Length: 190
Image (tube, rainbow, N blue to C red):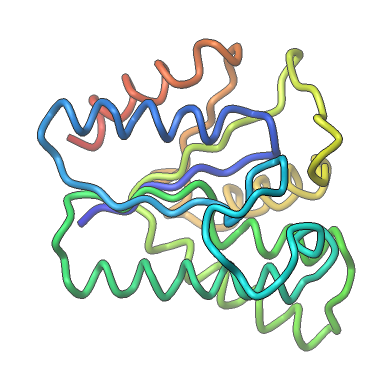
């Protein structure tokens, strides 16, 4: 099973690109499992979680819950190996960026989480980094930590040799992003 993830700020085309890729894989007869944020921008629950939608933006611990739920699911799927692909709307790097943005971590917690995140990032076969662009707009419903996310991404790419192979930067218009991802995926992952 190959692991694919999307990384970037809110409103950069991660979800749309993921759904477009899933539609393509379905037409190709490939099997996949997806993992998404537990809440959409309106706050409605896709899956029941033990915290309110508004706490997702305020609490590092709600992010811990989501991240560890994702890591558990990724690990489980890797072990049972019943799908061709695992496709996630976010990566472990998202938790680190959120924790730094909120600033709720002690130095010891940040060091521990950072080490886990950098090691977990090695497990992805492909990460599509959806850059902010001229079209970018903040919808006001979710947090926006562009500078921290960009700094973490640059650090990740510059300091982890495997990142250059796994990370694909997507920097085109919003309408073209899903097609860019699909074309790149066909050329590199099938």
